[in-house]
Length: 320
Ligand SMILES: Nc1ncnc2c1ncn2[C@@H]1O[C@H](COP(=O)(O)OP(=O)(O)OP(=O)(O)O)[C@@H](O)[C@H]1O
Image (tube, rainbow, N blue to C red):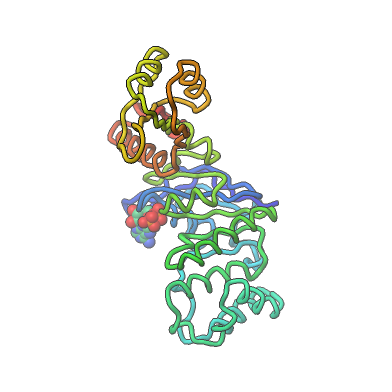
């Protein structure tokens, strides 16, 4: 089992500190979503892990080894950083055959990954004739070529059609189920929520969060309960008596819609039933990853205006 370990990693480009004393590990057997605003340092971190750039200080290793020590790196780690990386005048198949040859990967594997990426029927076309989505699929095929235990994907669904987005999600889930280590950056929160088990969040090159996705959401977004009733006044009274804050929502159709903050369905159901309040609908409104992420990045932006000594610990979730 191979983990990615980033230890006290710093990268400066002139006066810009793209990655700032970053420490985290990416564990096998789960998909880790890599999040952060534009310029947060995600791509730079991935480039440092892949030996494409040298750190100013600190280390990034795969199973304890720096990437540059692997003779046949594609057998150890597959990556998609830039879908434009393939040579346009080559066919997709030739592109993969060249990669396979330089990493001593058996040639039949080329056709396997072309098939898996849905490119078998266009494999003999030149890459310059490919659409963005097709190039993205080719990049993913290249990442899978060496059957690596570690996969790093930077915005993998970029340019993919809806079917492609489902395919990449299932692929990543499958790789994690097989015990591989999967690190995936994305700006699409709904999509990240559909595949990630764990999150690493960066802001201005620093670690803002490193925790299971469910925990991240629950720490930052309070649960709410949606209620539809024919007697809003009775609902509000009984809830107010028990310390709940019920707010009238948008109404359409039968009954009045209410939102109860900081509440759980079972508690609200018990109270309204005991008080005889007529209920047409009662449902939990779970917090979304998007809400939790925006809450974190907004508070991180506030803290970054203060001196570091005034900042709460960046890895501790703040109360929403
Ligand atoms: N080669 C480079 N030369 C100079 N500055 C760079 C270079 N690469 C990245 N940077 C700077 O480092 C910072 C982090 O950039 P990076 O691309 O790692 O962020 P990111 O989180 O991947 O952003 P995005 O979500 O926009 O892809 C930015 O301020 C960027 O301008």
